[in-house]
Amino acid sequence: MQTKIIAHRGASKYAPENTMDAFKIAYEMGAEGIETDVQLTKDHVPVLIHDENVKRTTNGTGLVNNYTFTEIKQLDAGAWFNQSFAGNTILSLEEFLQWFVHKPLYLNIELKNNKIEYKNLESIVYEMLEHFQLLNRSTISTFNPNSIKRMRRYRKHVEVAFLTSRRNRNLAQLTKDLGGNALHVKYRLLHANLVEQCHQKNMPIRVYTINKTVRMFNCYKYGCDGIFTDVPDKALHVRNLYTN
Ligand code: G3P
Ligand code: CA
Image 1 (cartoon, rainbow, N blue to C red):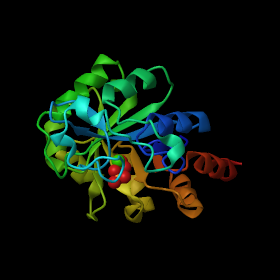
Image 2: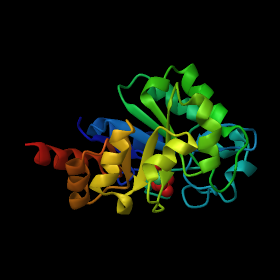
Image 3: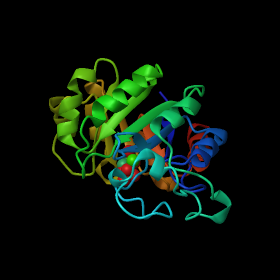
Image 4: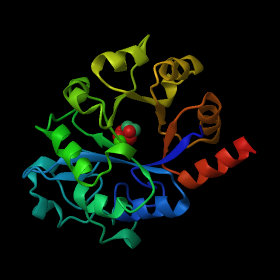
């Protein structure tokens, strides 16, 4: 199976991360999947933003969970990247899925609950995916092992990926023991044996964040199931070179 090219926070090299523009550009470039990050507002609305604090990627300040959805929607999430993207706003997961559901893409939603343990984030996201009938082409991932354990009850219906940048002698087995059925790892953890161990357990392995040509080649060579990249156009080009 070909390594899937997944746009990391959308085509985040070319547009402000996790915005509608970044997702649309990724799709137009030919990305086969989209990765995005979810946090919860004060009124429990799942929104797409990487950091717990809005400061880096908007014109606001303070924690996401100190804003109501109406308040957070007033922020500009594009101008920090380039003035031409001004007017982009933080998307709710629902707004994003209304666009995504009509596209033939794979989806990875990362729960950003490793710093703040948002209550019920797992069930809020799961139920939203169920509502849009997207469970069979989605993965929910998190760095938080306790959150993986809480999602055990969902793993028959949706793929649950353990995300990690930490070395461990048997990451594939650890993922299984936690209750996950996919592994997402930082590039420095990648080696041929790990891919083999995952595949022996029938477990997809995907790698982040792959923007360099040599790293792309290695991921393709090892047979990784997916790469997360800020440059989906480049990843497609390199994959064409690799396969031809
Ligand atoms: O899901 C892969 C990757 O996005 C995890 O790291 O910091 O980019 O969310 P980060
Ligand atoms: Ca992420």
